[in-house]
Image (tube, rainbow, N blue to C red; front, side):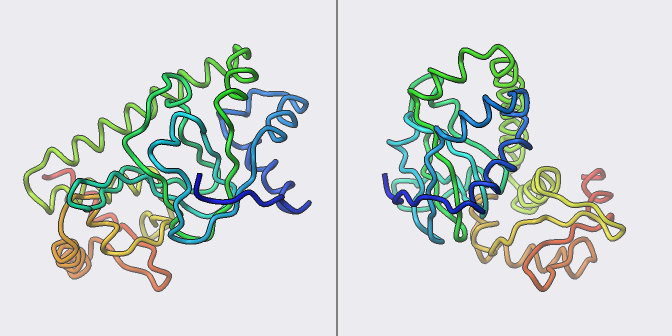
Length: 240
């Protein structure tokens, strides 16, 4: 394990409890069950760019993001990083490894200073798998994960780099988007390199394509690095 355990303050514990109550995975539990789960989750504070879990750790823990953001990445033999998923406050990951005991082909890295809770495999099996409501939620969640994977496979199937980047932006808007009168704001602060890794294109290609979409009035890069996806983008996507 890479990050070290730090006890949470009273304020942090209150915040973690609030996060758990709003996760569908745990929402079926009563107050006492949630309190028990909160005791089992081991708190960790991780600095930006620090590894949360290495690939070999993935069948031993699932994690809940209390604050901050992390990315699950696969590193090729030549050292190139491919982003598989991004998880923010209220997200959880790693339950599949706990269910089948197999490693996930990814390491997890903090994108910013982050607070998480780790649930060990033995606690997951002892407490959560005895709850029928939890089991039903696990099935629903696994179906949702599978659909997300299919959408990302669709994006990666395009030979055209622009189509891949468009599908990635579309997926991010669906998963992390906040709608307003201007369009959909992707609530992630991503660098061009991270977007490139997500779309499996070079950073130079991602920068060029993002510039083109900006000039065409389909997206806008906001001052806080969030991306505003405008209606023109979605209209164009339907025509491709």
